[in-house]
Length: 165
Picture (cartoon, rainbow, N blue to C red):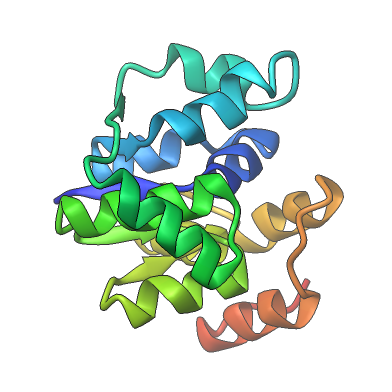
């Protein structure tokens, strides 16, 4: 299974101490140098930078079609990390692309890719018993300042027949 990630899920999961669930769920995560730069280089000293820099299960792979990257950035108005993750996902025929931002998720889906964000990752981890308290993980997301509508979190808990936060 090939999984490509944008920076947001990596940073957000690191903020709540759950980055390792990606390794348990997907074994290897592939990111672009642009995503690495955003998290590790420009994000030096911030949550996620050290965690990402030391992960042996995260592979950095550049996109091949630089022209497609530039064209997609201009066409969709996405950030460099989001666009590079989508283009790399297409190039690798990725099984899954990890993106939180709504507009970028829509673009990835338009390209025919399966997309999941932090909520879906945590739901999957909970379903596989890698996470014992999903509501607590959601509370941590809110406390960490993640830009997630609380109603999405409540709907997730409700769909899994779990008590509300």
